[in-house]
Image (cartoon, rainbow, N blue to C red; front, side):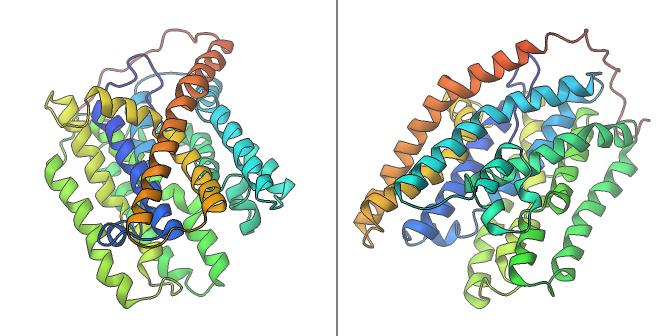
Length: 375
């Protein structure tokens, strides 16, 4: 989950607004699976973990769009990324461990250390990659993306449309191959390799990088924002009959497919929204409240499961019907309020302070943008 790190943070405001909706998808997924279902809605968000795929694609697109043509020392780039994610990561891990302690549940010290070092998704042990703060696993992937991003830009930024198109096709195709290719692994190992491992999830980040580069050079996506949004909704609705036909435990269930096959439709949505912003068209995603909620989305993503876990421990799983709706509403409101407080009280000021420690790099040298087919 990233934001534009240069001045003018919300130059693509619709992408900031979309961050809220992707975070909401993940939150509703957890509520449905842990706190009880709401008829109709829960079916639509039963595979809302796909929202993490959205964030991986978005991360690549925003970083590539931001840094293409801008010379920033690698150490400055990595420090900016550390300042962006680590303070809230540390707070989330501490809060999660505190709630586990109140529940009288032991937490692996190895998992906590791995969380804080952002390496936990590299371990094929659920007690590690789900330990500490379970929602923070994706930050281990993001840390890997940040490390390889300068290399990807060196390889791809000076290329043309054909290279980007083949790279995007290769990233999508590799995901389609990996899904059945790893089907023979034990279920836990297969889930780790496909759902958590930074090497495999990096294909979604790569797709975002080439999308961001193409957008920066003037590429226009073939679908409009309404059509792209409809494709995302249609994809998640199509998972409903698939879910009823195939149990999640089987490798060809929609659980892993929902995360891998959604990458192209999320890329289309991100590109369509960014293009609308660049063309000066209103999208309904860039208003003041959408921007605010988008800014809070990172904290909401990291903290909501902690609030949900504490509520379930204190009150238990609610009865079906009105009690479930009331429980959902309470968790949504409390976790969103906590996210807003964490953003304004910790995330944003800590990021600014840590960035200030690195000083200001020399004025960036910006290449004039080339055409999509340019070199």
